[in-house]
Length: 385
Ligand SMILES: Nc1ncnc2c1ncn2[C@@H]1O[C@H](COP(=O)(O)OP(=O)(O)OP(=O)(O)O)[C@@H](O)[C@H]1O
Ligand SMILES: [Mg+2]
Image (tube, rainbow, N blue to C red; front, side):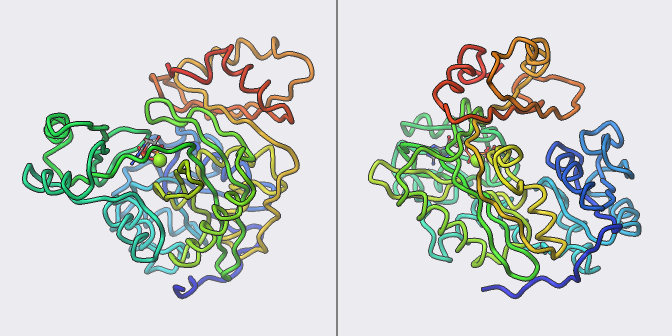
């Protein structure tokens, strides 16, 4: 187990800085204001960014601007991040300054798929077979090792299924190498999963660990569309998945929340796909389904408060609103059938680019099939737009 992060308990009245101005930061702020915290965020979009709109202070600057990070630090008692591509220089300076109990290591590991897989494998966790690819020679060796079909992914910078290609033949693999390269890549064995699952787990600066229930996730074109919580899986699988996430939080010395994505295989075993050391899209159901949500839990963890109860009080079906869907949802709000409890969470993004996450809805219901039908009827389950 890694050593615990330094840091005293942060009391109401303190200011928390957030690197990144996206929706995850926005929802941290919305959860943290009732706790008595003030917020400052750093984002190139400034006060127009989803988080900048709700934070009390904003520094408008690029993520690799060391002076801007220093300016943020000067007004903050603690700093966290809401996305993974902040510059390592900025992060290490803030960690050295004692402001970031999450440390630099997990971020550096999880933003690089090869290092991430290696770290998980070294710690004894199940991952898909993988190999490093930089050119045609290493691609052929990787195919030899991993087999086909496989998924060729960029080592860094990918998200929402971008920067990856499923390949079935050597010719397809070569084409994908041409399309994605020249850069460091990883070839992963294709996992014929039965379901995709995820767990958000929190570990506090005191070393306390609490995991949220397992969510079941549907992706379309690599983008998360729908999460169903609790996952419709045997309880033995749920227990193993949660325990694995808890062990991972300990083994990797997590501070704050981390989202752990899994593949469930037909034989009931699980494989870890990837981790994200921050609140996770598939954990948005906790906002309306759990006693404590993932954003409050993250703040509790990094501020040294007792972790909250992650237990669910109701099942939830979460659907992302992508691109134009958010505006269309706004037009439909008065047409939701009576008795269907739907919570709307919008991110305040101006430009509705196709596939862009503009918001999400949480359908709070015991009747999951009905909720899925409701989403299907509105085109919120299948193809994205
Ligand atoms: N090895 C694999 N076998 C089968 N399917 C895969 C594999 N890797 C990825 N996928 C599919 O592609 C989706 C996106 O992959 P991954 O999670 O690696 O990418 P990402 O771009 O980092 O996504 P995000 O950060 O949005 O979760 C997965 O959720 C899964 O549906
Ligand atoms: Mg993923």
